[in-house]
Structure formats: C-alpha cells, structure tokens
Image 1 (cartoon, rainbow, N blue to C red):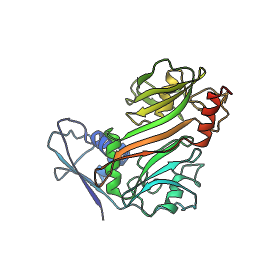
Image 2 (cartoon, helix red, strand yellow):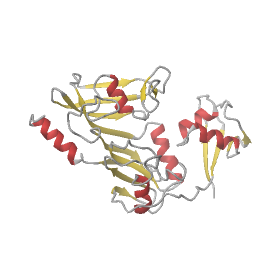
Image 3 (cartoon, helix red, strand yellow):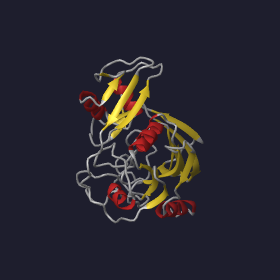
Image 4 (cartoon, rainbow, N blue to C red):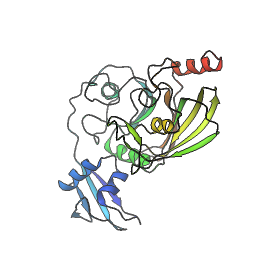
Length: 303
C-alpha cells in the first residue's frame, strides 16, 4: 500500500519541486519523476515541477511500496545505541561505507542493518533502506535509521527544518584562536575535482558552528555543530579557514602527522524528536579508542 504524505503550504511561495526537496527526504530527480508519474498532486489535481505554490495549497505525495532489495544481509557486528519499532540509532565505526556503491558492494552499514534490524524504511530506494542521513566512510559516530516510511518522513523533515541537532568532535590542524566561531559559506561541487566539494559562489548555503575544547599549538580539539547538512560540510568548511580535519586526505595536507587511517571526525551527539510520540531524545557516542589515544598523546606532548 502507498504511503500518503499531506503537506499544507505556508506563506512562502516556491516552485513545487524546490519546496518538496526542502520538506521530504527525496532528490529533485526523484520528485520530478514522482510528479510526472502522478504520485504527487496539488489540491487534488496533477501538477508540474515548475508550478508555483501559494499559501493554503495542499500537496499529497503517494510513495509506492519499496522494491525488494537485492542487497545481501551480512552478519556484521553493529553498535545499536537505541532501537524501537519506529527508529534505531547506530554508532558507525570509522572505515565503514554507509550504503553500497561501485567498489563498495559488501561490508556496508546497509548490509549490517539488513541483518541486525528487523524493519527498514524504503523511501530512499533499494540501495539505501532506512538511511535518513549519512556519514562519510572515515567519519565515525551516530546515525538515525528509520524503520518505516512514516518515521523516515518525520525524521528527515527534522533534519531539513534544522530542528534535529548533530554535534561532532574533531581534531584539526593549527591553532583556532577564537573560543567559538560560525562558518557560513556556500558549498557545491568542486570545479577542479568533481569527486570533491568546495566553497563556491552559487552553491547551497552551509552553516557550521565551531567551539574550541582544547588547544595543543599545532592542533586544536573542537566541537562542530551542523546547522545545515551538505556533503562533506564540516571537512570543507574547516579546510576553507586553513584548519582542516587531521587525517583528512581529501581536504587536508597529504602528510599524515597523526598516523591515522582516516579523518579524526566523530558524530558524537544527536538530538531529535521521536517520529511517533514527539518526545525529545538525546544520544551520545563515546569517542573511539584511536581518537582518545590521539588526544592523550597530544596532552602528554608526545606529538
């Protein structure tokens, strides 16, 4: 049976496809296809992606049942921080890819979820069941997983509307003199390397709040909170102020001074509302052992 999502437009006037991209966990291409195949209606009538919305318009989105996934469930140990019939929160280890992609078909978080978690939402398609947001391969920490499509819509809306909070711990190169700062720079695809993101004119607005926890001269231990959630946002923003995340081979120096296998970036705290009850929930994942060892070495002046 299709999942039906109803949205009522407020005061802001926008294109239909742009509005839905802000409200739902779907890409513009998915939305365009859904509109053209009649799965999205405005005031009970067929619509076009470019249609302008006005206050009071009612949008009904029908999400077809997900296709049966062909991904193999794998018996991979998973640190499940919380789980109920609506959602799960997992602590992803460094080095694990979230979903299958060319070159990474096995050993992914999705494969582990299919083995360890009974039900997963299907909104993101058969390659990304349950995935509401993601972490880079070499970023560890907390991810919320939706166990049904209704939960997926509710959780993704919190992230889109910035009511969910995501706080990361990181060690960066150099000394950040300010106790706190906000980086507000638009991010888009790099014009020189299509595999990377960059601060670019005309990109999507991105905002990261940074707070210094400890200073070690050549390195700084920080907390970074996402206000928006662009691809590689924290890594790109910190690199843009010449304070790249330590161990980040894509956006930092090639020389690995701290001898890490990946960037020292950990999704430490996650705060959101339960998708069914609306209760405020807060989760925290302790720093990984390699991260703690690096901090100790810095404090002991062994680095």
